[in-house]
Amino acid sequence: MKRIGLFGGSFDPPHIAHVALAQEALTNLHLDEVRWIPAGQPWQKSRQLAAPTHREAMVRLAIEGEPRFVLDRCELQRRGASYTLDTVRELQAQLPDGESAEWVLLIGQDQYASLHTWRDWKELLSRVTVAVANRPGASVVVHPDVLRTPHRSVPLPMLNISSTQVREAVARGENINHLVPREVASYIARHGLYKNPM
Image 1 (tube, rainbow, N blue to C red):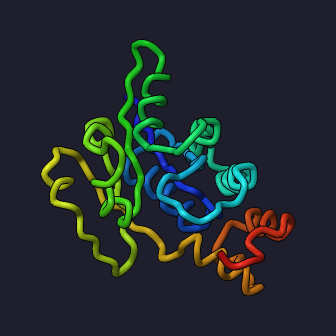
Image 2: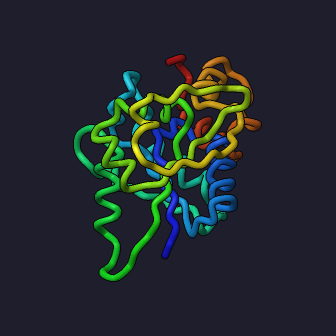
């Protein structure tokens, strides 16, 4: 049975903590692949995201060189808001007849804490194993309804870097080579992304 990691997010932009987390998941969870799934229209994001073409291109650059990292465009191609359960259903339905897989959803502590607000979250938990990325020194309070619902969760460490931090650094004119893969930094500079604070 294949073990497939699902790593969704706005990736606005993807940074070295994203890459490190995905690599950690490959190794520690014995995954055959990690599918990076840039969100089309995240239903919980109120700010304007960089164009999907830019975010897709940056993910491609960030995952180069690791054949077990796969870019999945399903949410970019879907109309309307991006819901994780829709993605999981779609990907599971695409499996060839007779083939099965274990699906591992990689999420952050903040997402785990708000999981009870996600659309049809109980069905989602029945379909995946949840791998929670824990930020250094941060604690999370998980909703009692989530804790009471049978599901599997495993902890993963995460570097203390955020996409917000990267965007703010760019807006201040600071060097971001220590925050994002070098090719992503070059792409951001070349296309003039994140010059204005968000």
